[in-house]
Image (tube, rainbow, N blue to C red; front, side, top):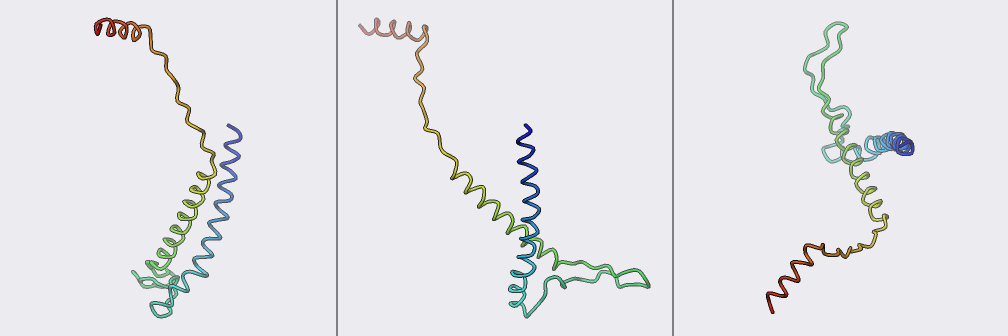
Length: 120
């Protein structure tokens, strides 16, 4: 059990680091390229103001651009994990299937003898 916990801890740490790498990939590489198509839009800045700022209270905004960016993060991470699991499954050695020959029980042997006698 201790080995499984250590493996899980290593997976969580690597997963966290991998998430940061993918976030950087999406925000610094993918989103600027996608932002060119709608006319040079920066997705981080896309938002809808629900309530204007009043005095010292900040404005209430709906940041759908950040949501789009996080969706791309998730899709890339999910795809990478899918490919990694698929590769690990291919690496597993398939054990040859051994068919067990089951010896008939005494009851089955007796019934077979009765059947053969009735045929005669």
